[in-house]
Structure formats: C-alpha cells, structure tokens
Image 1 (tube, rainbow, N blue to C red):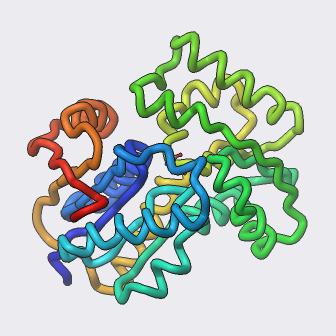
Image 2 (cartoon, protein in one colour):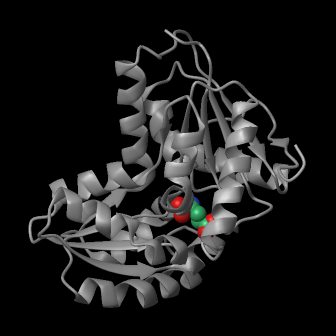
Length: 269
Ligand code: DGL
C-alpha cells in the first residue's frame, strides 16, 4: 500500500480524459493534476522545448511527493517519455503504448488511423510502436491542431457548427482511406468523441489514448502494491487562468470540484 497521490500532467484539459477513467477505476486514489495552460498548445513546439516543458511539469508533480506519474499527453509522451523515465525513480507512464496495444487488438483490416498533434505525428512514435507489435499494420496519420484550441476554448459539443466543420475537413479524407480503427492520439480529442464518431461512422473503432493509459496505470499500481485505501480526491493545478480551467474541468469530469484550481508559475516554481 502507498498513500501518496498519483500525478498526471498535460498541456491543458486533455489529460482529464485519463483522470476521468482513473477516477472510475481507482476511486480511492488521490490525484494531483497539472494543466500547463499558460503554454498550451504543445503540439507545435520543438522536441527540445517539449522535453524541457515535460521536465518542469514532472518536477512540479514530484514536489508534491507523488508515487507515480502519468504523462496524459500524446505530444509530451512522444517527445519526453524515455527522458522522464530515465530521470525518475518512480513509475512514469505515457499514453502511446497502451493506445497502440488496444488499436492493434481492435483492427480487423490492419489499417489504423492516427489523429494527433503535429509534433506527435512528426515523431513517428505511434507508427513505430504499432509496427513492433504487428508488422502488418498500416498507419494513416493526420495532424489536427485546431481541435486542441477548440477544446481549450470550451468548444467540443455536437451541434457546434465550427467544431463540426473542422472535424469534417480533417476526418473525411481519413475516413476515405478505409481505416477501421482510429487512435485519438492527443488526449484532448476524446472530448470531441461524439463529433469525431459522427464523421467516422459506427464501423470505425475509436481508441481513447488517455483512458487506455489510465487502465495501464491502474494495473501498474496494483501489481506494485501501490494502491491506496479510503476516499480519493482530485487536486487541480494550472499555469494559466485557474478559474477558467476549473470551470471547464468540472464540466468535463462530471463531478463537483471541491477545491478551487491552484495557480502555478511553472517557469519559476
Ligand atoms: N493533449 C496533448 C496531447 O495529447 C497536447 C495538445 C497540445 O497541447 O497541443 O498531445
């Protein structure tokens, strides 16, 4: 047993897709979440910058004495997972492996789509990971950066004309390739799941990278005898506007936010 909290970070709201699943699976855990909203989006940044940001995010969470960290961000995972694992003596998980494993299991025609940020697509990490799991998988990738800004601005609901237009523009060519499985490789994207499903159709399986990673983290904690007893809580930190973040986070997590979001000066803390 280990009563310390679990740390989770992302550039903004996206990582809450992992937190929602963690809350469902492990309601006894205390979760400390950091959304780096003053520097979102991560998806257009260089690898060097992403590694530096991820190290700072990690250092912040470690200052809260967490027992494990989930990098609930596809972009930070593709750029910085090996570095953070090497530099830290606690379990550090990303979202790529779990999502790829699930996609490889789910596909029947071996054509898997990937939508993610430009940095994640450019890295090729999702493709390479799937190919090591099954060398016959063909991946079709598309960067969808506008989705991140829409979500951060609270625009993700079905019926929003702008969101639906952007989704059609990004996804109709993807649908035309005949993929039967689509990895939502940026953790912001499951917030748009309804809209994405409407374009892709019911025959395409959508893989939620954050939720898959949360399941993997639950297994790691269980196997390592790191679970906690009692009633768990969520503490949210954001480097940008804390009140705005809290409002959207409460909505999305679908539970009352008991504590206000705490501001963090990530460059100097
Ligand atoms: N949610 C993130 C990801 O999974 C980052 C999106 C962004 O900041 O561009 O890639």
